[in-house]
Image 1: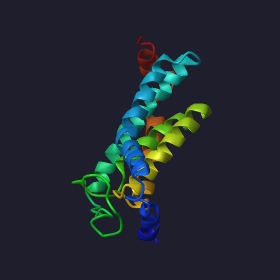
Image 2: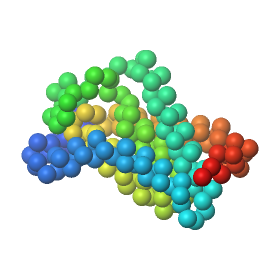
Image 3: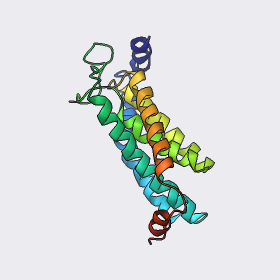
Length: 180
């Protein structure tokens, strides 16, 4: 079922040069642009210190999610879908394993961090971007659907851990959020 759904998402790859370029662009530049959007939150005009806390928590969630992925990669070695003949690859092949998707981990960690800080408008905007990035990873042929789902789970887990260890209005939070 995973291979069939992955193939279904990837089926249009290579047929529309405009859509292909758009999905490649989203895949390549989506995460850096999302990080830039989070950095720019530092200068939010409303609820500044709460938003700064959320931005820092998002960065911590991102890093914790990727650390969880590195642990998983010690035990799970899943072949990429293009190597298995499931997808048509639109970009250069990757040298690492397929599961879990780091792009999904990073983007969902950010979304979850903002959601846990009760910033709904920002969360919805970030969720739309995260969905496009995750979808693009399947569309361009580099991940299975379950790789993206697994990455989303590790991203959410990273956000939960960040929520537990980095509290708003703690001494560290007050020190860091007052910078600039």
